[in-house]
Amino acid sequence: MNLNQLIIDSITSSTTNVFSTMLGVELAGGQVKAEGPAPEPNDGVVSFIGIAGTWAGTGSLSCSPHMACRICSALLMTESVSVDEEVLDAVAELTNMIIGSVKTDLETQLGPLGLSIPTVVFGRNFKTRRAGTAEWMDVVFNWDGEDLLIKMCLAPNEKAHAIHYVAAHTCSLEI
Image (cartoon, rainbow, N blue to C red):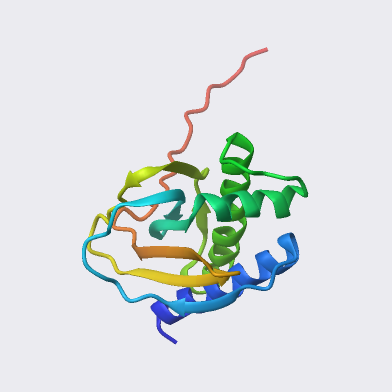
């Protein structure tokens, strides 16, 4: 199995499992989205998590403000009607659970990987841009007519973590 298919399969499995377990929601989809032209401006919530180790990259979750509120309501069993700190925290936590599960799946093939703390962006008429040359895997899910996009990009880390241990100087203690 190639890495791209492994990432897609893991995103699909992790996302459906987290939604089912944590939100009690069965998602439709898990369709791979073809990379299109330059991104269009959008309104919504985007959450990013960095991945580091012998491979490095980013995982993200994108959704509408309405879906972000639904995620928060289902996760915290409360009513959320507008995007506020609680909603952004819920989206960050959901992203952490999904990308964390993908990371765990990928570690069997890629070795140890670490995650950063999620960063969440909410706004109107903004664009996200993909930097670098590594290919992104985009998987679209649907929850009652609204799309949820999970993305991941991984590439070999050019700065592999070489750990160098230097023997400590010892001092004799005279008593």
